[in-house]
Length: 197
Image 1 (cartoon, rainbow, N blue to C red):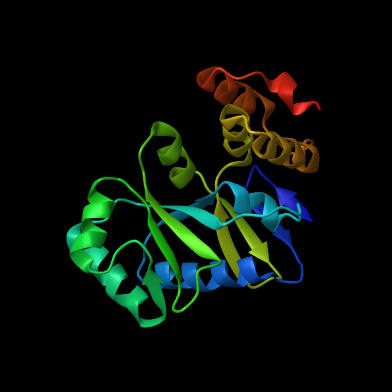
Image 2: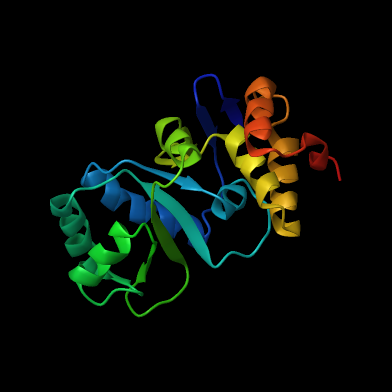
């Protein structure tokens, strides 16, 4: 794995999973519409090989005005369905209340994308400072900064989240910015000693 976090890049090859293929196809739509995004949470550890179950893939989008939101909604209608919105008006209401769309391929439930709007300072940091992961020299996926990912997983605190944080920390420990990780830990009021099992 070629990891250069100073350049915010990771390059590696792997056999693509069902989740990887779903993500690649979904973000190709966002890229075609020039919508900024960043993928966070459970899929990030799946991407790097941790075997775990996840029901959805979490993604933040930049704030969209009604015109761009409708454009995204209409493009998705061709091959996808928004499970919790049967019309654009409902989808818009969900989006405006900062709730998430649940998006999957038509006639399927899994995998699905939990499409979220930015809510917090940390969401904005994720979107503004993504890491580009290049898979198999041809697919680019933008993920949240690993230091923030690790700290936020510790903050969430479930056993699965702690395992995710430890996995990422162990995998990238020689590449992480420990000052930045410490800064996020202080802001989130969590202890980095929890990274040691």
